[in-house]
Length: 323
Ligand SMILES: [Zn+2]
Image 1: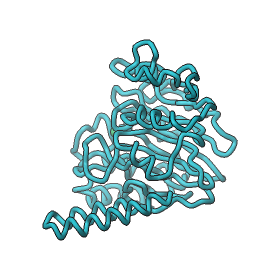
Image 2: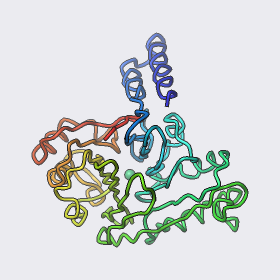
Image 3: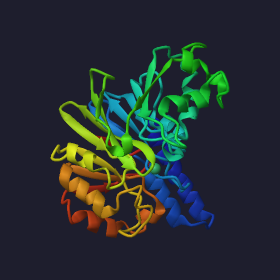
Image 4: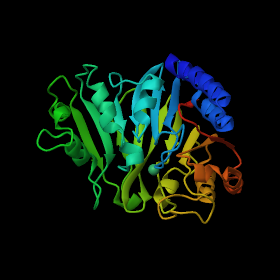
C-alpha cells in the first residue's frame, strides 16, 4: 500500500505545477488531498473505500468499491465500479489473497470494472476457486451468474478469451457465482460462508427495479455495514439491523437535498439519518458522493443530524477505516 503514499506525493506535486501553469489551483489542491489517502494498517481489520463516487465521471472519484483488509492482506472486494481498476492497484489489491468478490448490484458504477480487475488478476496465476456473490436477476438485469457468463463465456461472452474463469482452465481461478434472492428488498438475509476470519451477511435492499444488496461484515467482535444503493423502501433492512450498533455505517449519499432525484432509488439525507438513528453506528461515513450531493453537504449533515448525533465523515477515494 506504499503506492498510495507515492501517489499522494505525485498528485501534490502535480497540483503545484498546475498552479504555476495558471490552471485552477484550488480545484487541483482538493484533488491532491483526496488522493493522499490514509494507508490501511498492517495489523487488524479495516475497510478501505477504493471508489467514493457515483455514475457521473468526476475528478478524483472512482465508482463505488471497497476492500476489506485483515492483517495487511486484501481479503474481500465489494463492488468494482468504473474507475476502481486503478484504485485497486493503487491500494495494493490483488486477486491472489481474496476470499470472495461481493457485488451490491449490477449498475456500471458498481460493477463496470469487474472485467478489468479479473483480466489483471489472470496474470497472478491463482488457481483456487473464487466466489463471486451478488443479486439475482430482473428484467434488464442479469443475475450475477449470468452477468459473468455474458462477460466471459467461451460461447459468446464479450470477453470470451477469459472464459477460463468460468471452467477453471487456462490458469484462471474458477469463479463460483452465487445469486442472492432479493425480491425488491424483502428477500431473506443470507449468511455467506466465506472465511473463518470474518463473517458476511447479504441483506436484500430496495433500489427501485434493480435487484440489490447491502452487506454486514463482522470481524474481531465488531461490524461494519454497507448500505449499497438503497431507497427508504428498504424497511426490512432497517428493521433487521436496528440497534446493532456497528462500528461504521457506510451510507451511499446520492441525493441533493430532500427534494432531489432519484428518490425512488436512493435515500435522501434525512432518510440516511433515520437509518443511522435506528442502527446507532459509532460512525457514519458518506460515500457514493457526487458533486451535486457534495454541493449541499452542510444541508445533508443538518438533515442527518436530526436523527443521528454521532460522528459523520465524507469519504474520499482510498480512505481507510480500521474497525
Ligand atoms: Zn450507484
